[in-house]
Length: 155
Ligand code: CTP
Image (cartoon, rainbow, N blue to C red; front, top):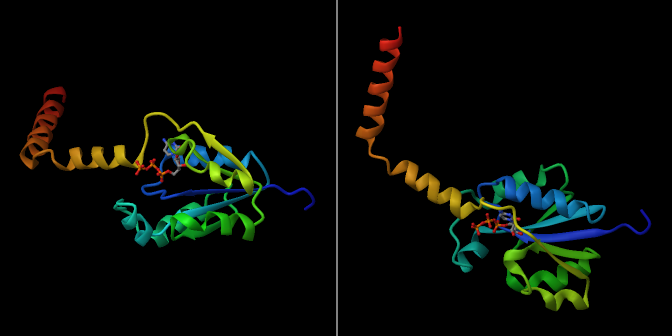
């Protein structure tokens, strides 16, 4: 395709959520082909991030999102220039939690930072999960007993 525009983004995409989906959908609107570099488990460890979902599964989920054309592994901080050249990237784009951090790529392509979707993140999901799991078992059982009793009262 003539004048085809290719976009690239980078991220962990652990516990894939609505913020991830909205970001990818907005990115695709910038052009024709969207490449997503998904951080490998080893690279996440290097970043001090521990993922719940392994790389192979995160990559498979992202590559099956309708607007995504290709997934590549993100193995290091300094692969970006090489990727931009190898895949003829027109636009590098990422959420604005990274504002200004990748301006050095402006020599090679357009750089865009997008506003994040509010009130959702993998960190928040992990916290909710951990709060949920820390509810004492007796409290859950008591709640069920109360519900059963209420049901009987209404019968
Ligand atoms: N993102 C977004 N809106 C959100 C969460 C993430 O637009 N609510 C974007 C990020 O800005 C990034 C991409 O999605 O460009 C992948 O982000 P990632 O770090 O994998 O997701 P987070 O939910 O931010 O994960 P964490 O809480 O571990 O930082």
